[in-house]
Amino acid sequence: MKVLVLGGTTEASMLLQALANDARIRPVLSLAGRTRTPALPAVPHRRGGFGGAAGLAEYLRTESIDALIDATHPFAAQMHRNAAAAAAQAKIPRLVISRPAWHPIPGDRWTELPDMPAAVAALGPTPRRVFLTVGQQELTPFRAAPWHTYLIRSVEPPDPAALPPNARCITARGPFRVDDERRLLQQQKIEIIVTKNSGGTATEAKLAAARDLALPVLLVARPPAPEPPIVPDVAAALAWLHQTALRGV
Ligand code: NAP
Image 1 (tube, helix red, strand yellow):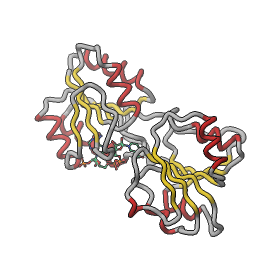
Image 2 (image 1 turned 60 degrees about the vertical axis):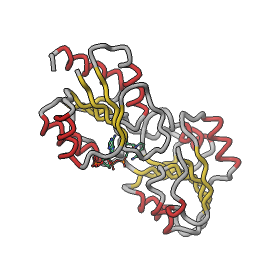
Image 3 (image 1 turned 30 degrees about the vertical axis):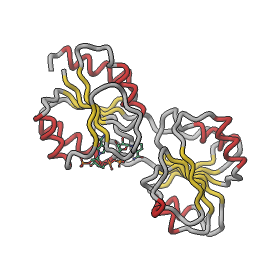
Image 4 (image 1 turned 45 degrees about the vertical axis):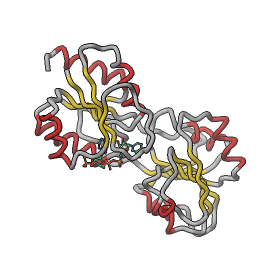
């Protein structure tokens, strides 16, 4: 069974590792191509957009894909929609892996906001030292609040043209440890964190560190959930794939 895995996430990499020795399933990984040096598993892969839902449907047909696993990030709303539409057009089964969102626990000082401009506004008029971990594509709105000082962390260096003026950039790839995150926040005298409610374990240490230090966190909420079926993790996706393969898809 030939399976297209839409990736760019930890879940996609874990799924492909788990499938490495499964002779029944031949995976192909698709990446958007945003990261210049992605960590690539040892499976066939392709990079770049398909040209919308119609382009993806065409790819599914020409490459004789039997099933589609949409393991893109919870904030990749357009790709979720395209994957659902394309799988329906190509008449193949599709599954979304979407890790559960984070939820506050006692001690957290979170404010959830609908989008990035709302997070920028919530930083307020008083200059603050801000830790920004929102991804390198979503920095431009912060140019509207140039009076803050930003520490920006991303996997790869962001486009300088997207940066607010008082910004220092660091690059790092998770998973991160709570001790290290606490040290970073203290050393940089961070007063507030802005992040997205991505969920998962790789980047949640900053939230525990913020709790320890009683720092406020502005959390951008997820876009609406994709169409079902949705599973929360790789184990459930493997079970679905094996059922799909057993049905002779
Ligand atoms: P998006 O807004 O939902 O998608 C925009 C376009 O990028 C899609 O229409 C598609 O282009 C292309 N695309 C997205 N994922 C693709 C994939 N896996 N393979 C091929 N083309 C893909 O997505 P995004 O939020 O920009 O995210 C882009 C990629 O980064 C995704 O793969 C996602 O998993 C990963 N990522 C995103 C975030 C985040 O916070 N958004 C965080 C970590 C990783 P066409 O219409 O031309 O096919």
